[in-house]
Length: 406
Image (tube, rainbow, N blue to C red):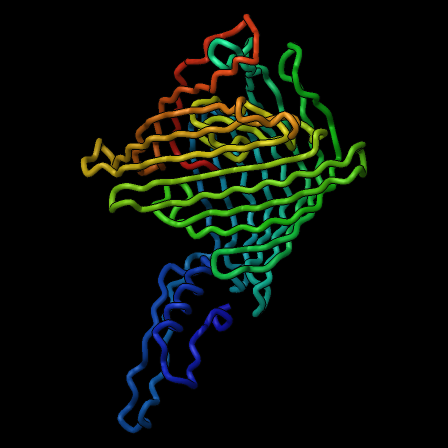
């Protein structure tokens, strides 16, 4: 794996660009803590220009055990255990098992990742998974007075998946990847209360085929100060096994980060997705909250407030790193987003766009980021809707989390 990452041709004149590329390639394997390139001083009797190229590597421990904790207002306390070998037999491949345990969500995953097959740019990934989580969702409708209402108490739903997925693809430049994947899973959705539900639940065996393109050169996945993230994904599930109706989904995300100054960063984001009208509840788009593996970020709504087959969201976040620390390194954030989800594409309308604005603080603590945000949602006035029964939706929404999202 070391030789295949070398971009320096020792039979030709040394090029600084080749050395930088080699260092980036070796760091990119994730196997080394430190990489340096130099030359060995020749012996006096050696021929002129006979220096030996030296590559010094500080290899990370192959076997690692990671422990993590997180708390947030939706899922409460969560524990992460991750045990893996990140350099199997010196190949740079990784195999591991990790689990997340919580009051409202539990996951167990066995993964094998081959980031590079031989000297080719081809990649391979496979995973056995179990994922169970509970969600609370409110029924939101539009009114003549405020444009938006939340009716009744939160509905309690459960979602469970288990199965296997495999992906095969190729690297596109340093930060891009194009893959095709197949997933065989059992997907269940069920009620956690006895109230009438607006969504159909069921138990399905699904065989899905898909493909996606991902590009990510951000300097951080949590609060980046530069770089972009792009993900375009298509998935098709035929009427096979116990799935009576075929369905499909097309989803695209884009995030751009601009460093306005040494302390100020602007993040612009967008997501758009469409799908069949008969997508099962387990596969629908979820919107609301600060963002996690299940629900896309929308400051102003609670986690999984909006559920549908089609989604459109725009967001902006301004972050300022304070020169004054409030116990820990502190950042101030301002967030705005606008969007919605729809069950049918024909009903997508600008009149039904929900907006949210919020502000908060982020502390960089030794056990992970601590984030506290306060937000308010609002919507465009919709004079065509006449519904006298309403709940004032100008409520203030609070978010708090401690630790990294797993």
